[in-house]
Amino acid sequence: MAEQSNNTRRNSRRQQPVDNTYGHLQPQALDVEKAVLGALMIDKDAYAIVCETLYPESFYEPRNQMIYAAIRDLAMAEKPVDVLTVADRLEKDGTLDEVGGPAYIMELSSRVASSANIEYHANIIAQKFLARQLISFASVIETKAFDETNDIDDLMQEAEGSLFELSQRNMKKDYTQINPVIAQAIKAIQTAAANKDGLTGVPTGYHKLDDITSGWQASDLVIVAGRPAMGKTSFALSMAKNIAADYRIPIAFFSLEMSNQQLVNRLLSNVCEIQGSKIMNGQLQPDEWDRLDKRVNTLLDAPIYIDDTPGLSVFELRTKARRLVREHGVKMIMIDYLQLMNANGMRFSSRQEEVSTISRSLKGLAKELDIPILALSQLNRGVESREGLEGKRPQLSDLRESGAIEQDADMVIFVHRPEYYHIYQDDNGRDLHGMAQIIIAKHRKGATGDVLLTFRGEFTRFENPEDSRLSGKKSKDMGGEIMGSKINGDDQPPVGDYNPFQVPPQGDGPMPF
Image 1 (tube, rainbow, N blue to C red):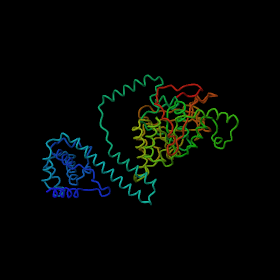
Image 2: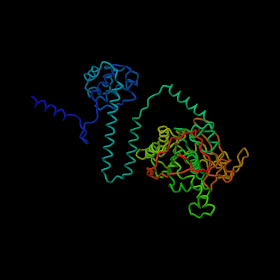
Image 3: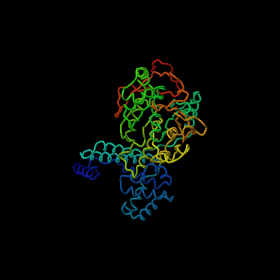
């Protein structure tokens, strides 16, 4: 008798569905699936509870998938959902016998007395489905990894892209009642009111720009665009120096166009007021060597993290950005520039679609990390074909390769130098020699407008006009760190919390920690 019972159990185990790849049962909850389907057919409001959690493919049993699909179709058509209507729907689809006939549907409805626990049960099914997806994902990657004809770097990109798609499909965020949000908003207003400068975000170091923006705001995607030779990178680096060296706010700079050495050379030119060509060939005059020796302290130990990985994917960026925020307290990310990024591992019908995905991902990353992300972007050639002062002025429609950039961005800023087009005076009669217009063309949270800055091209430097008139301006003694392609500098201690309302120390002495 005992031997017969053991044989029965062994036969039962052999009949269970098995994942041949791993020799394990696939994650499943068949009894829970039946309970959910039964609850859906006895409670007309039950589908509204689970519709955002479950899909037909969420069910492991094929016939349960077909029954849920029939329930979904009835609910979407605003028709009653019960045993009779579901059976009728399946019969019209020609799948009633395939699911086990009316008897199986009756069995499902008789298994439950109420739908009280349907939300909990639906989450169990969703978790099992996600586990099966992860198993399938891992199996595909494992098979390709064994194939020596596949490039490992390409496979890494594909794996990151597939995993990102999987996480996005299964990411759910619940609604929030308004009261706690109001409390947060009032607290933010009170904090801002205590700051005389009106800054609520990361300061740029440019007073007029900060007056309009109140600083770069957390969770914002800021696009800085312009035609080649307008000084986009110089503008970004000038801000990076202001933010990290003057205000001691940790930032990360992802350069897809230049190496970290080239970027640092430009920063040295900016800070030491030495022509870039001399920085490159080392032909400095005695007074320039003296300035280099004295002013390089401005950059030493500054919380600037540089990553010069070429062809950076948006998925690599996410991984590195999370680490930078977690380990170094980074409060802002700059990217030079957006069109050089890619979304490897995902398939697109056009480059425009890929750029749209990158743009949406950057906005999502800014929200996730709750920091501003500033991305440089190219403009198309439309500017060159237009005539006159206003014609050369960039427009939102000039953004290159994707209208989604304009849609996703919280702020779009153009760097425009009329002098480049031999325009030396604006409509108000202001002299534009050596000047750059910073045009705020879109500002989701505030006003638009223009800010005039002085551009000193020989030093790749943007200045407040009033600062450029001062002679012998002293540098503050700050500091820097370089992050290479693989995010080095792991032995550095994390940077402390940033207080956006703290006034930066003054004077020439060393910066206290």
